[in-house]
Length: 484
Image (cartoon, rainbow, N blue to C red; front, side):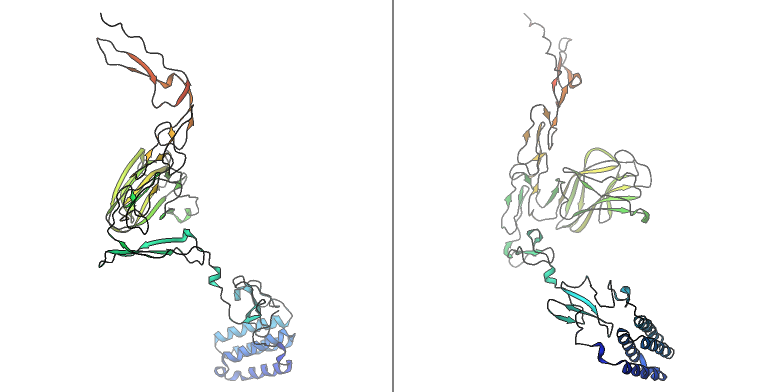
């Protein structure tokens, strides 16, 4: 075991000298205010030292003396004396308990002092001084001992800086020059790794980019969006639901504390849409999709949604800063658009799927296909990626769905691919499906306008055609011979 700091030795006093010192301290009890806590601590130190040296009788004697002094001093000091007396008696009898782990906040405290504090820096261990029963700390590698708790090396514990941790922000415009700067910063504490780019100064403040354009960070002029991406201008449109956009999160709120342990996923990503999760069997709860943003000017929030829930009681509503701006809607079979105006400032936008106390109906969920937020930026700093099943050309304001029987298997696609033979795809598809053989049910009948009291019957595949092979429309009936 490492020696305590300062070279304190347990054999500094003989047993007789320690008994005399203890008796002298106890005899001074006639003046409790003069005795005070110092004499008691001194007696306690002697008791522990004697116990550590195998002097059982001294431990008992000192413990008894402490209890006598206790009757003449303050209650608070007396509590300390009683505790010291108990420990002195236990150690003197040869017990190996030492102070409790709870009392010292260290697990595994033993009389031999081999205590490991898992919160210490690497290489340091905590020990107990047998003379004073106080903890001290030693580093075997460096040979350094200390009564004070060594502090961790905060720099050494930091993770390495990565490019994902680098963010940027424009400064306020300098009215005298009409320019601003672009500063870079890390999202958290880190060391080494990827360095921050230098600050870019003298950037014009009045640059305005239109739809299909964006202002690259640090640039002085706008650029067109690449194929497979798009831009609405001063804001964002979220339609690629493979990951939650930055600033967006999901959570569940329960009205009853007893329901807090119920499983709830919140809103669930599904590539081309996001839905409110599986809420069947849950009660008095909200599944919340939340987005926090700063609007630099008056703007709008527009989203496409549909919902299938218990009429009037369950459903979707939309609120801004806790104020409801779209009332609870329980049923919309097809996607509908809703638009709300938002004033400048920081705002919290929430799409809430609400469940009441009982009953369920339909799919019991809401779906959102796209969210468009305008007014959050003077200019788009980047272009949005087209989701699967959509495409765009250079400088696009929006993405177009792939036509019937074509598909785009990945996001950010510039073109769509035709389905192979025997397969089909609906508009906006990310893949093709195997077509079933055609039947008579896939053939539609139509009639021409009446002419001379007669009309012509025609047969053709119903559109869109999603079958292959099998039955075919009959050939058209021959018309009447031409007049002479």
